[in-house]
Length: 111
Length: 113
Image (cartoon, helix red, strand yellow):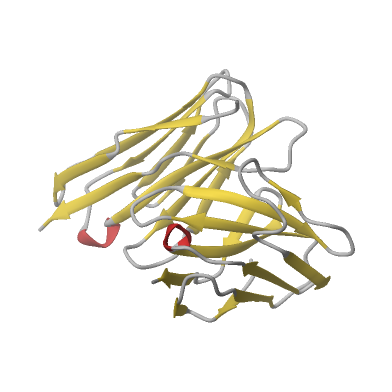
């Protein structure tokens, strides 16, 4: 079935270090979204990518969508303790209305 | 964006009973989604609810166990029926308020004893 793989499962960083999480699908996606879930909270929409090779930035966060629209990444530059949480990618396939979530990457930031 | 409220925020229930979770949105939306999330896990879609039609359930979820109502464009309920401890989880409703943008309610933390 359709599946979105996400790695790593966990990442421990020192404050100020960079962080990257990766998502991969075996099938071409029509779009990909990224969400952040703080501990004890609910997922919060961050951004969506639609175009092949698209790159979007939100302050220290950089989101990329692969040329083949099968993979995506989220990179955080110079992490801060406020970045702590779980980052989910979520993909949608052409013709579908269901969003498929990756397993999530839980980020721990040590001050 | 959309603002979503859920009730109750948490509950502890005895096995064999049922709990109905309410989801209210501050704007009219076509589709509402119900998810389940185990602690530390990803989100699993239970069903999609369109106003005026029966909900569409994902594999592994059935209407008898998780009946859903969608009486209008701003409200939905999910009932967890004949509960067992395996139903202990966080239940989240969400809506799509913009193209491919999902917004989630705060969740209902259910514990079944």
